[in-house]
Image 1 (cartoon, rainbow, N blue to C red):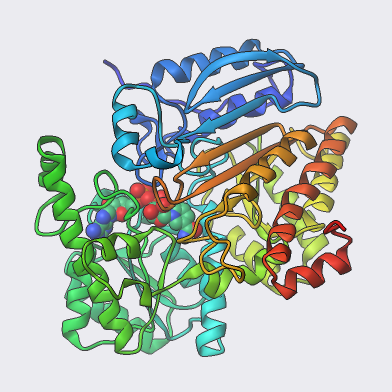
Image 2: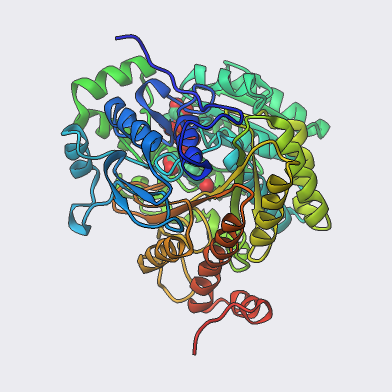
Length: 548
Ligand code: NAD
């Protein structure tokens, strides 16, 4: 069978009935663009098995349905397959998606894999199945914010003259070297797959590849000593790199990890074997593979703990590695802190999160125009200004040109309306589609990540993402999704996404005002309800109604 590749249409020629529908049509294909997706042939976008559609047949049905969808109709997607169309009304979302959801007791990888093998489900990760993945850029700003916050908290400065050691340079993990160098530091990162590392050099996320871990460490220390921001990818297993670091006696300033440890069968790769041997073992004996993964992850986290013990700031970067290591016998795994309670929660208390937009024209000048607008509107926020300026210099677009900007409550609505106005006036060549990661302030329940260690112990309460999704549907987002298992794996998270199109119309302006207010607003409610003083005071000074 010849391999089929997808690429979003560009320009002003519509294939669908209007821009709301066209946006979904372009974005599902953009997620699968060979420049965007990690494994486009298998419809895998990022994050282990995170897919945009269940299979090729299902994808073709989604595209065919969008081509004939009417402005008052809504397509329903169940785990990456279109299952029907409903006649609703023009202000309703054009697509509703539910991906990878399983009832509590069945919410396990084994049950998911059984259903997946039967062709009944797919794993949607977060933005893969909800069609708003924008390549590695989507995570770079969050990663940058995290490293900057960690630098401020622990060193009172940026990362100049600091060494960060990590692993996993995949779809999301590759943001680490770029973010660390943007913050002035040196990043040494392992990945078992050389071709993944090569892709990062090509897309300018990584500076160089050094095959020998010892030499790589030596070069990294030299750059650190000279205060040069630099990143090095090492094609080896995480355990191999960390063993070399530990045995050398070097204590890195920071240690973290973004291998796909949320999935011990398809994401994580055991050591003491090549990737080819690992693939062969996975196909031949999945149970044996998982035993090897468990053995490796235990060693991996033990090494991280060892470096932590010796003084390295060590944090979990949202891949569930601590849970897997604990299950494999590392009782101390949770001595490593999660990055959300450590560095990101204060941002969530202001409704700030990974807001992003994509130029449907395909023209980079449209993003340059929105960048200029963002600098004009938010340029007095030093962190936002620095990010946009650095992103303009360093970020290579993947697929349709896009920008991520961690805007907060109030800012998102103001910016969305201003962009809608630029579309209306013709200053932008075509409509802009706005969305966000599910890792946002009000849209996720994930006790090992976004909602770890909540003040009131409400970590596992999943009413919040459901309320968030319902509010976004009522507000008229263009598409809304509810997913399970993103980031940390089956049984560990429930989360929701929304995407809304600015097509320049007054109808779009009304939707934008409603969605971009209630979406981050639900995050303020969630954090105020949990008792965070910052969220309560933000609510009272910004007119967020807490009821009563
Ligand atoms: P990915 O599957 O695209 O990449 C994972 C990479 O890890 C691959 O390149 C793989 O070769 C490598 N790898 C696997 N096992 C390894 C090992 N033992 N040693 C060295 N390399 C190994 O996944 P991704 O999109 O980069 O996401 C990585 C992880 O981060 C996932 O668990 C994901 O759920 C999580 N995640 C975190 C955030 C966040 O905000 N912190 C956001 C999205 C995803």
